[in-house]
Image 1 (cartoon, rainbow, N blue to C red):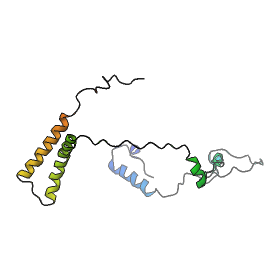
Image 2 (image 1 turned 45 degrees about the vertical axis):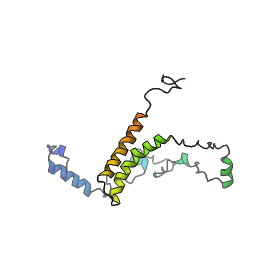
Image 3 (image 1 turned 90 degrees about the vertical axis):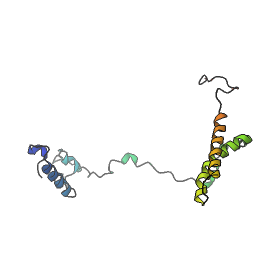
Image 4 (image 1 turned 90 degrees about the horizontal axis):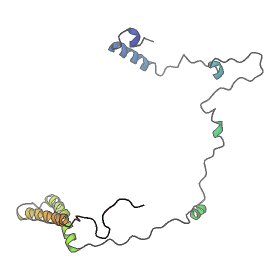
Length: 169
């Protein structure tokens, strides 16, 4: 193995850095010769006494220390009859109230504010040009609808609630 750029004296030497990186990449699949094939206690520096009758320590595997998880079982799915009984007491919300229709002026205002731009996009796609009176009417419909919607916005607190004092506990 080559020395690192720090050992060479110049930490900014690009060739030394590239050479070290190339060596690491070349040896990435090589077996690790630094580790021994000795069992775990011997590898850690502990030695078994030669005259003892103790069995040799077991070879460690990745899952050998998972004994506390042996009693864990994945539950099996319940039969369909039990699932039907478990659904008792399920909350079913009441049907929502009908959507208010609104007044006629509001519907026309929304039609002008949303419908005019949609028509301005769709009409040229189907081959109808927006020249003269057609374009002027679409612009007027949009402005009238938008102006009506803005003018109908509330400007103060609701009459039935009073001023907003925040959360009430």
